[in-house]
Image (cartoon, rainbow, N blue to C red; front, side, top):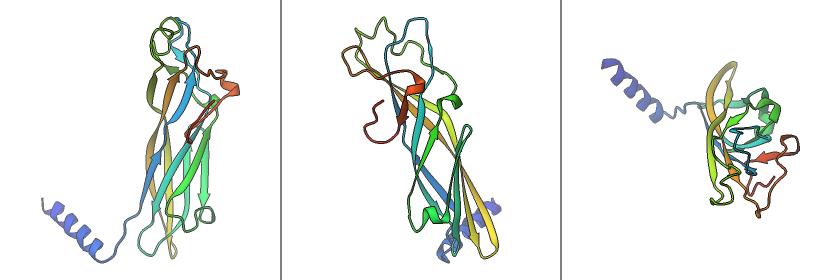
Length: 184
């Protein structure tokens, strides 16, 4: 209990003294993928190339500067250096994951061809299709520090019934994006 009080007092005095802790806040938009009804026997689908948009809010400690932010998921990595970030408070990062880096997704009876014509087109959220790993590198004089964050990346599957605008569902010819109004 004594340690807990000490930590709280230390944190309070640090904040009062103008100490700013390092942090990296991440907001990841879910990617929408439109699919056509699939046969009864299939419960797995392959996703197309996915393009995730991430809003990053990096904060380095007092008198520190941002050196870089790295974002990775599957075998894809994107790095933003200090020149890329500049004085921006929010960094808009894009992470494009080729479909070859994505495993099949189990969807059960969602968008089943036998019930698609009688059931309203629906959506299925697949949580944690991938996990993005992010790092923030800060520097103060000759000292360097790293802050690590993990963020799950979600996909929303949208079933397109006959009569709706149906996309080409071949994964090689698709790319899904988390940007506004994604259409395949």
